[in-house]
Amino acid sequence: MEKYFRFDELGTNYKREIMGGLTTFLAMAYILFVNPDILSAAGMDEGAVYVATALAAAIGTIMMGVVARYPIALAPGMGLNAFFTFSVVIGMGIPWQTALLGVFISGIIFIIITVVGIRELIINAIPAELKYAAAAGIGLFIAFIGLKNAGIVVPYESTAVTLGDLTYGPTLLAVFGVVITVILMALKLRGGIFYGMIITAVVGLIFQVLPMPSQIIGPIPSLEPTFGAFLQPFADQSFGEIFSISLIIVILTFLFVDFFDTAGTLYAVANQAGFVKDNKLPRAQKALLADSSASVVGAVLGTSTTTAYIESSSGIAAGARSGFASIVTGILFLVALLFSPLLVVVTSHVTAPALIIVGILMAGALGNIDFKKFEIAVPAFLTVIAMPLTYSIATGIALGFIFYPITMICTGKAKEVHPIMYALVPVFILYFVFH
Image (cartoon, rainbow, N blue to C red; front, top):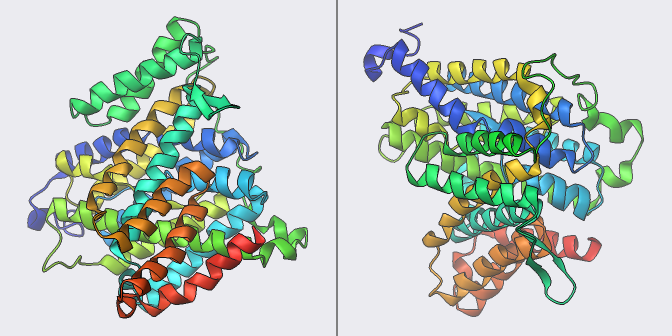
């Protein structure tokens, strides 16, 4: 075991790897409750999604540890789950079973891209500014959902939205959750988001704002409501949905966000651990293969796209250096299957602070965009602003991809635009036509 994970070469041991794996788990355990909360709004069974989330995270993370031998954990991605529910299912009116099919297909395409080795071609085709804009826009979108779920922001006829009733118990609890989580994060406490949720839930129980769970540990919920549901469109012979322009855009968006989020996360975390050599990541293909395979497995189980988590950096800071830490994290996700009764306590008002804080962290990508260049500022701004205002990640990406070639051509930089970007313009125009 020590030889396979190269403990001596990496200067690590079992104690460091176990602590690192535990730290990573605590830093990202919030997804166990946030993901079911978000996907249940799409009509999916909350208990089944909880199991699918834990299993997808466990399988993907263990695969990353064994195959790629990196201390990087995977789980259903924030932003992608919001896109799945609010943009695809609620916004486009696509059944969640068909949306899962979109996740499955995007995962298969990701695997093909990885195996064939055209990763660099695709990475170079999309301008860095649009990647940063997509990340920041998703951050604003997630934060907006969090504010809405908490009741901090509510609909208002005259101004579209306004400040909610902060004296209402559950909303006040969410405000407390935001404050306590901000404090924990500012103090650089590893797992601050998860601990913030725990403290918020406990306070909610004390003041009887939340229902008391009948038990803490209970039987594992049935996976039947979501397992294999991605095949339902074929059973219903809903070929109009399967081959629609809308689903094609959904698949492209899942693929785009997952691909670049994973690539960025892998590089950032690996660089922190000192794995990057000559600006290249060893075993990058194996790491991407583990990620894409996890998305396919997740879709079969019944959850949105599974991707690498930046929270893995907390485990590396705690000493993790090998894939053994990922195995530890994966096992802890399996143990978490027993704690599903706590779902009754972790309501949308308890998970809202997590959405808001994650949104803040993702919005940091704005700092990498040069807004002084008008040809960059226009597509980047439209990408960012459209996501929360239209309640759709796909719409933001579509606007950015359409306007980028236009502004580049008008500023005499047409040759700097990759042919793939030009090819995608009519696809996204059709998205607006048939949306």
